[in-house]
Length: 536
View 1: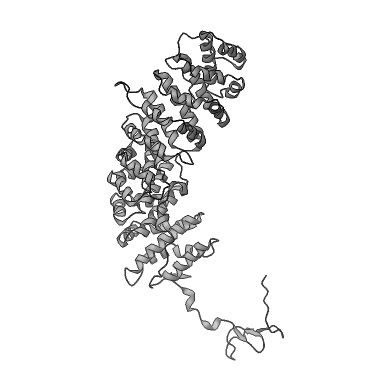
View 2: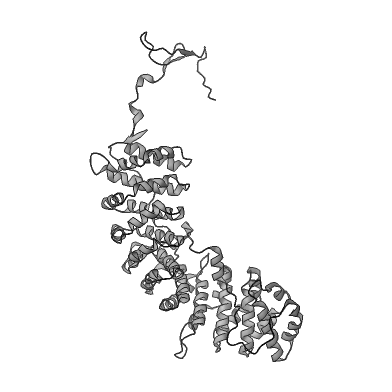
């Protein structure tokens, strides 16, 4: 057993260094959206009937059995039959549940629909674009059929159509294709879609775009900015001024997708944080920070992701986020009903506490520490581990005043509880935090008051258990902490209890061999020169 002692602490290399303290998105794999939700936002089908469709149309919804007759219509030279057949295919593909995308592809109608995209009839263009958009909303192979058809350049041209409904449908189609995968996204970017897509968001002749068009355009832009591997930043950075403009919108859908686009563009894997810097230079940060306080979680979520990404940058870049007023807005997010928001808020704060002492002062002054400790003590593990990082980073990068404040707020018991978790990395982060706290305790007087707290809350017992951990780093760290700050009660055991060897007789004698002592006897190993031991 170990108990606290006063000794000069050993000088050891920190387990969590400065590069590790700030954690980029890819390393942490932190996701706010579930996969199903993300897939839903990447692609959209259009089941509704827009105003451009004639309300007098009473032909009803076709069935698969109608396909042969519809093929004859679209193959006709009669414009009325062409429009009727195309509209019916569009209706077939707009069925809400399980639209028959594959049978439509296999019937061979897609090339004809592409030809209609190139016509001079905006109603026919619109219906054909709508049908192909819904084909592109299918699985990857089905989307690829639209690409292989050569539809991407045609849709890019339609972004400049004088007809607003055709423009919007082209936006939707390109958004679906880009949302499928990174390679398909790159096809759209290489076809030159981004710049005309940005123009769609601007007023035309003093007339602003409809809210429907603006929503779809913002969503399509966000799909062009997202995905791994990331898109060519030299291309997508041209979206930044437009996104900065879109952040002024009062529409929650536009704000949500604009913030997601900013979050993708600030997911920076460059050594000098070039992407983050480009975003900062647009003046978007103050707007994104303000949206942390939006009343809807669906807006808070991407705003938090963007802010969290920016504070993975340099201290100077992080300071711009703090100067915009982010910390007071993060406080209520730590008590959000959404677990993902609480977790992401802790992650963002951990990247601030990886900064300088002034930034840690700001965290404390914003009263974030009590909430962090509460989450460390009570929340689910995925939130607790982010809170562990945030706390441990303070002990690494802060000063003695910061550490004493943490102890005063009761950080040691919940931090020690993290020794019991199943994640070796988080155990090491918690061990590093406790070690740093104990180092400060050594400097505060003759007795280490922090070591006494560790002992009182069962920390010594947990450290002793960690000496049997499978992870060698955990074993070494726990041994180092015990040997540095705690003394073994077994060190004072009576040396007379150690076994004594009678070399000449190859015997081991236990106890006092004098006549007055208690003799337990001896074990003779025979004439062998080397005694052998068998344990079973």
